[in-house]
Length: 69
Image (cartoon, rainbow, N blue to C red; front, side, top):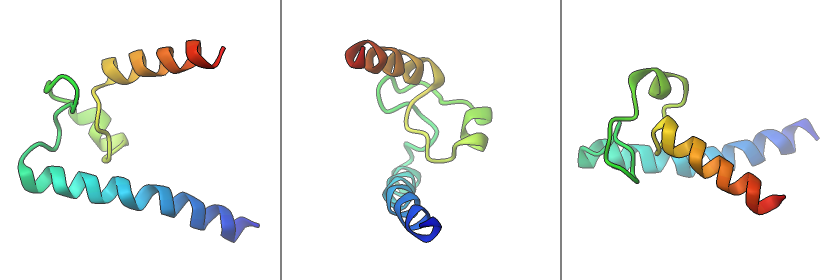
């Protein structure tokens, strides 16, 4: 069971890593894909595959929460 969880986690993470590598190559890494603003070094250190700045991520999570409720 643990092995399946690891495989599932990796199967979700690998596409995110590929997207981050593509953003590095294009020069867009470190910038929010929605606003174009810098994501911030602290967020990138904690989540290197981050596509959104903390503010946009928070807004998106709130929208999801309201949609689910």
